[in-house]
Image (cartoon, rainbow, N blue to C red):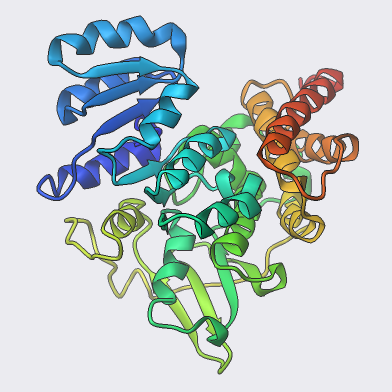
Length: 383
């Protein structure tokens, strides 16, 4: 469980706790939330606990050693754990670029992946798909949208698919004017109408960058040209995504907006279990609305098409700049609209690599982050 203390990690452990006869959390990892990780280890008793932040290691070791739980810290420990012999499935629920390296290690070791870290495919989709060709690993999507598509494609032939329709709630600013969005505060952006998520992904939802990343992820996951992967705004978040077929039929997957549903489907490798969660009622489905996205109000969404058409390391640059810009916005160093501006300027300055290998992705990520930081330092501070 990579990212056990985050939103997806906590919900994954809740799913595991409902079926202890089937699932055992062998390894739990966290970035820096050491106290939360300690509490989880006391409950789930994994063999190994890893904290990415080396400065928190002693606290972790001192708390868990008396329980007989092994401890470690740092990026190398994460890679080793993802490839451990007693691990069958790796749940990648870390945020951002950090999920790439351990996911690669897991694929090379032949582990199945329950993928919640969309940036892995956004940053290096071509590399990941190449590695999968030489590995018995399978990827089970955890994002609700990609899980929905995966479910809709069960029993269908690839040549029967016309296009994928990725739904988006529209975030907290769907009904706001462009002028009002320019004045949006951190508090405004964190008020997602339907989902309870971590801060970073909630801001990505507000900019619709999260949906841009999901379009790129779907392109790689389902091996479809970018022109056949479309976004559609669906404010109720009841229809999680749809597949249109060549005969005109459309399949949709509906469900309550609860991430434990796609998590359980991924862990169970398409098995369905009663999770004791509320089911949809007729009233819930009485009014389902759909509309075209507004690319003028949400320019980050348009970066998906640009990244897929240009290819190479473009999406890696976008992701790196976005991570830096979102952190700066959350730290109240830049305005909401500066997120997109920072990404675009970084794209202009970062070198383009048409056929990147792993080392090129690493170098791109490092350089793009440095460029984005320089851009943010030059921006006028918000008042």
